[in-house]
Each structure stands twice: as C-alpha cells, then as structure tokens.
Image (tube, rainbow, N blue to C red; front, side):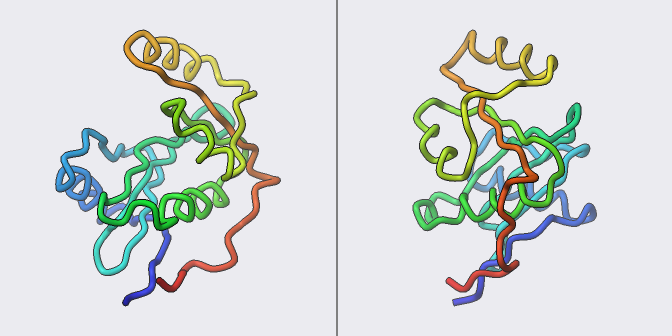
Length: 149
C-alpha cells in the first residue's frame, strides 16, 4: 500500500479539496484565505483548513473519508498542520469529540479572539458546540512527512 503523505495543498490544487468534500456529501468547503492540508495516498483521503485569525489560526473542515476513519489519519493530519503554525490554534467541535482533541493537546480552557467568540455563540444557538485550543510553540512537530500504512 502507498505511504500516506500529510502536506499542505498547493493553491492550484485547491479545487480538489472541494471535490473531495462533495464526493463524500460533506457540507464542508475549502476557503481561499486558509492553508489547506491533506492526507493523501494517491488521492486525497482527508483534509482540513487553517484560517489565519487574530494572532493564530482557526482549524475548520476536518474530514476523513468514511472508509478510513479510526485509523489515526485525522490525528496525524491535525498534528502535521498544527505544527506548521505559529501562535494558538482554535477549533469548534461537538462535545463528543473533546477526548479526541485532548489527546492531540487541545484543551477547553481557551481564550478566543472576539470574532471567534461571537461565531461560537451563534453556532451554539443551533447545536451543541465547544471551543478548544492549543498553543503551538509547545506543540510537538511530527517526525516525518510520510507515514507508511
């Protein structure tokens, strides 16, 4: 089996991220002002967006192809992407995902930029949502770009 590669998606290839999301009926969208990160074998099997915000980044759009869930792909993709950032990284998630993100170093006791706090309050009107964050200078960088699978 081909090794998994975790890397930023170059700007000319950004339409592939939205194609990946659509192929799996995900409502997520890649945004132009973000760093797009993917896990690939030959095709994209997972992706996420890191949007610059305030003095850090907002992690959105984490999605793994359903057939490959539970194999550590999401965690490795988050580790690679977050280790490339300077400053804090924030995310919103369903409370059921708290343990997953805590294993990656994220915590609940997070100070959000004003714009993110307002967005969280709006989101919480319609569904359960928590904010988590990690400070990247203490975040361990992955040892390598490719991981054999």
